[in-house]
Length: 388
Image 1: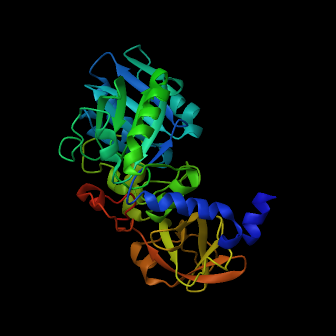
Image 2: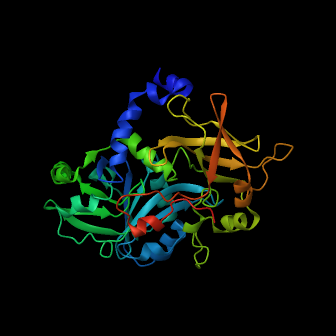
Image 3: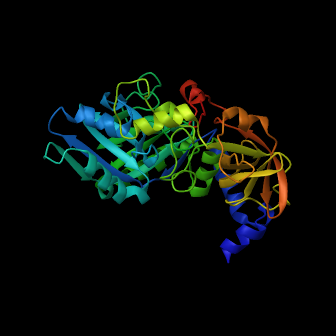
């Protein structure tokens, strides 16, 4: 079976899919690519009174959702501080929002919102997943392609990173455009009413032809995501992960007077320390042409001692080597979990065991700054994962 083959003897030279990914992936840092993202859960939150402001901050652990046109990445926390879900919130207009989350979280997010937002009719929550098609336009030439189809100013100053605008694309109106991607490159996610989806797609393909735009698939996007240290819900992160463990503590507004759900638990963890940290591992002596590839679940060793497992992995075509993401722990002599600090992480020598062979690895707690032919200052400064 394919799964068995990939787990046991996956080699780059033996698997043609790797060459297909290589064909698509390098185009993104220099040109642009388009991919459908229809699978995301989408919900709108429409309050009828102003009291929703404080309650939205309470469930989102930030008050930035009050800024019109703002896009933020947030964690819906549980009372113990771990994740309920990891999602994005877009402020459509004053006190009106659109929430995007992984598709597997659709029912959980719906239940969470209805549980913690007012039940007195002062807020309307609508699951609009089936009403919108999502297309992601990614790469440094994404602005050139989209500019062919809209009169909206797409410059960095007028349409900055992590912002939202409603615009016309190819004369189709009501397109909700968010300046962000899931690969770390310049780009926009377009949420398109279904009746315009095919029309907008055809226009994007036509406009993108002269800019060398390609179609890209899941594995190409996955390779870019992993080498830039972008976490994936359900594989890297789950409902047991806290923001402080996975390099997202900077998103939590501890310095604001917001009594968000899970605040006391997170403040306690921040004061006492965490028992695992999310890491980026670049294999130093792994030969992708002849050695077996990691697939996930491989043991991680620090100073010849088992300290964790790989969560997701891919070949990084920019870094030109295999990249593994995972969590590192600290076990005492009795096998109990001890505290883990950034200093503990960076002082060790690491290896990843793939099919019984250990490969040395360089470790990092921050997203790497990778070269691009057309640098964007905002993108260059942004690090999706950063242990602070």
